[in-house]
Length: 133
Length: 296
Image 1: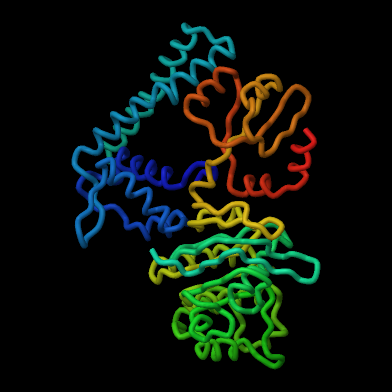
Image 2: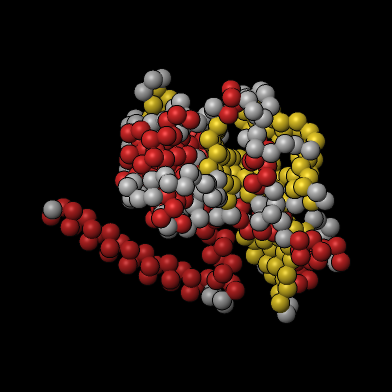
């Protein structure tokens, strides 16, 4: 937990990350507020605030008497939101840092394509291994 | 949500010393409060007043709607774990846990047994033979297992090791989730407990200087670091909580900034970083900073 940002926002982000990664598929039940509180060692009211933030955004919904569930279409919605943030949070700082270090746009493009090749190889390896298993 | 404690204009003087200076606040039911502040800020005195162990010089205290002084109805619902609790001279640890249910209607002996095992408390030993940490553990067990509707912990973990402190935090959270109650935790170890707290009251020199939601306090201040001139320009006429400089670099703590200001700061090559609860409290209760500002 990052000490310096509102914890309920971090909780909401972590639940979103779990939905993005597939750990929490759509229409499955998410842990209760008290379970989140115990797991992350935070106040249950704070955990509740994080969960409610996602309910307000339509990512989670409540089944009365049962608990919270991941809403259908959440994955696509979170992805769309995160893509909007991607430019401001990743691309702009990256370009600013590259400029500071005197890395040209062309060098940057080369870096991207070589990194992409590496990670594709890794991804392929993983897929092959999974296929073999 | 109902109010458990209501304090108005409360003052406590010991001779010439004003320990609590015209303090007013309320405590809501079933929340975990942090009562924070430096040594001598008045935390213990305030808790003694709230539990009827000291008489107020001025002002009013309502606990569960009435004065706590000599009120069995109020005191029955309170558990106050002190930093150095005194026990009868020849008490063994067993005696403490056997007599606790006489005072606390909600005492859960199975829970107490579990906690005693968790903290590895030797129950056959005399209380006066316990180590400082074990003595603190006894207090923590009493405080948790009493399940009092209003529980005070005054620096409950003197001498407790890191493992035991983590057990305390974990059991407190678990049990609080199952059995909601009002908890007031007074501590210096702000970083360790900050995530457990729902509300924060900060005392300094007998006065309440912060009384706010813990989430609100977190993220209410920002550090600005960068070239001296650029920092000064960005900060402008804002209230400065803290400032320091080395060479051409300056670091200044101010109130939180808006996203627009954040962009402006980035454009000016300033680094913005949030301030943790502990740092914020250090900065707001550090008198040398205040003097620095006044002289500046």
